[in-house]
Amino acid sequence: MSENKKVKSVHWADINADKIMREKGKKDHYTCASGVTPSGTVHIGNFREIISVELVARALKQKGENVRFIFSWDDYDVFRKVPKNMPEPELLETFLRKPITMVPDTRGNNESYAQFNEKELEGLLHVVGVSPEYIYQAPRYQSSEYAKGIRTALEKKAEIKAYLDEHRTTPLADDWWPVSVFSSFTQKDTTTVLGWDGEWGLTYRCDETGNEETVDLRETSIVKLPWRVDWPMRWALEDVDFEPAGKDHHSEGGSFDTSRNVVKVFGSEAPVTFQYDFIRIKGRGGKISSSTGEVISLRDVLEIYQPEIIRYLFVGTRPNTEFAISFDLDVLKIYEDYDKCERIYFGQQPINEKKKAKELRNYELSQVGEVPTEMPYQIQIRHLCNILQSNGGDIDAVITSLPDVKADQIPRLRNRCECAWNWVKNFAPEDFRFALNTPGTATIEMTEAELAAIKGLTEEVRKMDSHTEKSMAEAIYVVAHDHEVEPTELFRLVYQILISKEKGPRLAGFIMLCGKDKILPILEAAL
Image 1 (spheres, rainbow, N blue to C red):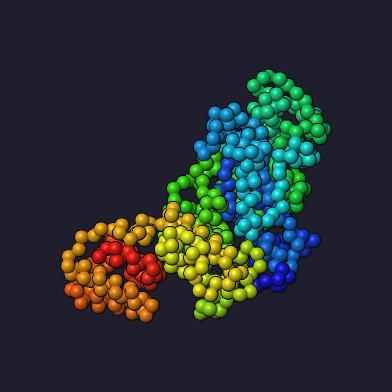
Image 2 (spheres, rainbow, N blue to C red):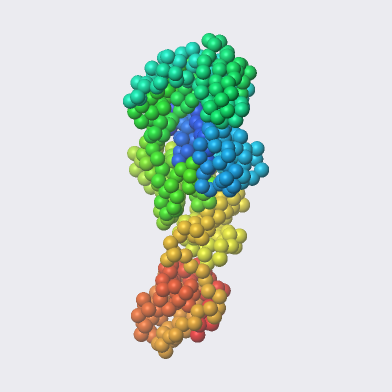
């Protein structure tokens, strides 16, 4: 789809784009914002906000508007807790209450713990089609770029306090200040603001050392605004038109509630917004929590899902609806749902007109880049998993064995193979997994009738080139009947011989899939 093509508003991203244009009026450009504190691994719940903003920004662009998509790293926040998944926790504990940009990277060679988390996500976002303009808050604060905003907050202290108190059961203390200070003596935020001279001078005391100091807001690197003041200050400075937030921020009295009022002291108004819900995880342990380190990250999800399918999960779910990222058998259904959407887009799957427009838009927004002009190569995910297992995970062998694959289709197909194999190895149920035995591995005691039946099946496998899957299935039943063996018992014997299990994939299809060269030596060795 060309960027200037007008799109019909059938999708929630388009509807929100229309709302932004309606409420903010005609502008040279619209600013869409997102942000995360790199206090730990950025989890898939954080990604929901990021992809939601990208989708609305994309919808605005496709309506012919200029869009600035900014992503703020709130990396001048306080390091409050050592995540459980971090090496050298004793060292990291010595940095508690300091800015997270001062915390060392004990996992790699980055300048800081914060930068490790930033670079990890930035290296993956483009893979799923998200390319924002990154803003790092630490250098902005440290270069006093927000000095005017901080002074405004000090000037409007009483108004800000009144707005915050509206949503508090206990009012803020009379000596509350709308700023915090990292002590120049300890680098920690364990400080007390003592006074402000009405211009640029702020005096504070370091609570650990007792030292007092007056700093110039235009030159200092240690003063910052607390979250509920910082957020609306940046809305005003960046002229933000749209920014969603999670349930916690959107709850009554939450930070969005207070910020929509506090932003007035900075001479601006709150952006258009919506609330997005939490994400559950199915089929894999781990609570989503950056501070504990027990998280599911975008990298984790990319190991199981193709980038387009990750986008499809979020595209097809309204932001205010809770849903699950699945690692269990639901993975197969999600792939099948995406493939069906793709077939609908290319006119290869019937659908009623009422649903068609929605499915077409879902497919368009699910693509990382330009929408394909030709139907991509499709292979049913369950079948692909079986082919991979029958080839011991050899992706090159699998791709070579598939008919009619074009060269330009291989990269996406290879990615699907990699994801499918990762799922089989790490998350597929035990009864779904199998590996072909090497000839002679399985030693099965059989009756004379059973042995004769296996010999009969072996003869049918020798004639495989003349069989279809249907005729092979019929032949298996004939063999069982002719040798007076129950079909279910024959199936059990063959599975034990081939994969050392009581059951497995549909037998005729499985034999045809693996091929004569693999199946015949195993059956012959069992005779």
